[in-house]
Image (tube, rainbow over all chains, first blue to last red; front, side, top):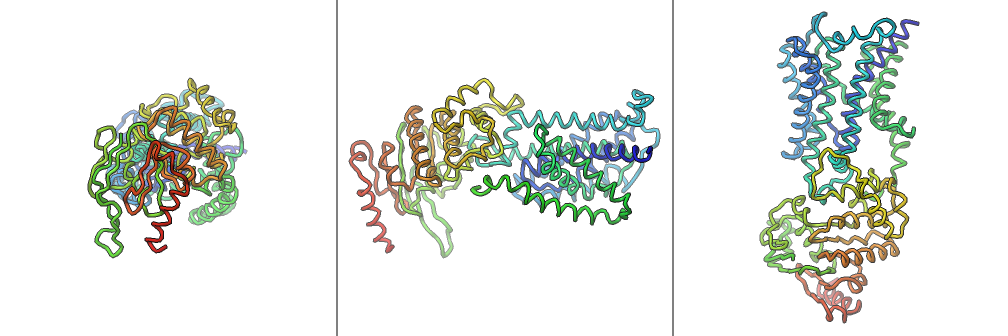
Length: 301
Length: 257
């Protein structure tokens, strides 16, 4: 029983961490309609920034904020390439991702490294608060609180005037122009927030796993997209569930599926192939179940 | 006042498909004019609208709005003083946002889009009253996504949004062309009402000769980058659809169509 419980806690912990990342993907993929691959670079960027700061004994919460800022800068760079230099959106993400591989390596100084076991992290700082029965959940609670704060902040932002513009840009760029606003600037802001969230997730992951690996970003965007699509298809159907909530749940469902598959005997080297197959299946399902509802909108667009 | 002077525009310059559309084109629209622009395909009417809006660069010439040169400004900067409704009803609203959200952003034009609450609650009753005038029942559907409205409803909403903050100039680009005849008439009547009440200088491109005859204070017929008919006042009131059709046919014969 204890084994199952600890596996479940692990799934939730990882689900919430990657859920923060998936909300970033939701901004670019769903709201901005921008297939942003920078994510594969900004997630390890968050890890790298957090890693170096923890290693030098800096405040672990400050490391989260710094990672968010670093991700924001990287996201703005992707936006800059697309908006100002008119490079295709898909290529912009690939370029940023590629550049970040080198940058992340330089930040840490090697391809992979571990934090010392007694490093001060957000988890080591908070664990004394949770005693007794709560002890096994201490990490989960901290992670969930960060994810929920990020979710509420994003929900709030999307309801502000600035957030309205962000939603309009992906929906109807022409309308933003008639409102006398530069759609390019808004796109850059959206990409900055998105990659900020992704890097924040990376920073939490770094303190959770206490390790850095320069290639740990591979497949991040696919994972994020899977969660967004699960969130949009499955959880959108339930009333009063916000898309952002759905996206976090989507990531938990995703992580659970992978754990179950691994427990059922799937070799870990086969997971990427499995993910791709699952992903295509969800996309196809999405096309039939989700898009049908929007058919009226798309027809005359 | 809108002044287009010495406009030159050539498409595909230096290629075998080179086409000179405007060579020294001039047009002045006075304050309060409601101009209907008609003409066959390729006559330059939509290009003219795009030149004014800043969606198409000109080779040379000047575009002045209220005495200010706007010919070099980016489209979104010009939009500060220009309202616009497009042919495609989905271009004028945000489909995934509700009617209320759509009206709130339109109402905020010219102000800052900061971190204050996006939905305008104070003006809810005003939005409702604006929608009531349409007689489409939209006043009770403020929380409906604009994407689920019909083309006519969306275009009516787009028109309200484009004129919510009174623009100095309203550009209507065949804004009734994609609608069924009934919705088309409804939107046209709404256009007339808004333009007259708010006294907005308006440039309306249309393929519907009847609309050009029945509405507006001035009619221009474009052909090969020139205004071959330009009538207003009593002269316009004296013109019938047949008068315009006659000119249309003459042009067509000239062109060998």
